Image (tube, rainbow, N blue to C red; front, top):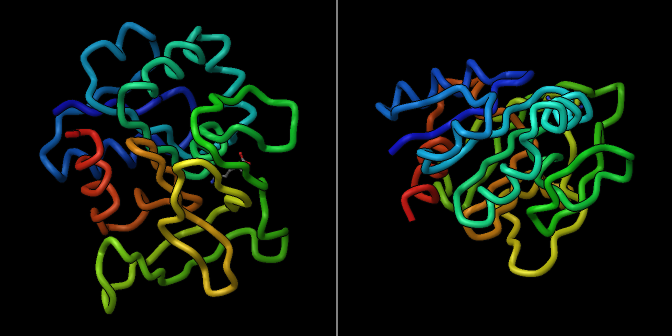
Length: 189
Ligand code: GLN
């Protein structure tokens, strides 16, 4: 099992640390040839417009899109935006998941916050402590996409479509490896 982390910009080092904790072989991805021997790819948080433009400049946008047709990809925060089919702005996107997102959806007053989330896949009574930083919400899902995590007010903050996973928050910033372990189950399929 080898998982790549897109390393153009943003919080890629933290994902590498989490994966290493789980004993997984990792690679920082900057060239499309580095996708060849991967079982899955993580697109980290950062700034989605910048990361998208860098993906274009590094000739990675189309190769990652093709990779995602047959392999697991997990986008956290800016990465979730890049997986979406629409973010209501002019910016390069992968258009891989049937989700639309609203960027910076929690407004300036609460641009960062933490919350304990109930994740059905992890069982009740075992909340996942999540960090949101200028986070998007997943405003619509369609097709085969399912909502994995919903806030009390109904906002969707994690979604899955087959082997593709999107989270609004940053599981790489807490010590809790459960989302990384969940992603590995998608990469194994
Ligand atoms: N606000 C950023 C964007 O819209 C995402 C923030 C993050 O990845 N923590 O691209």
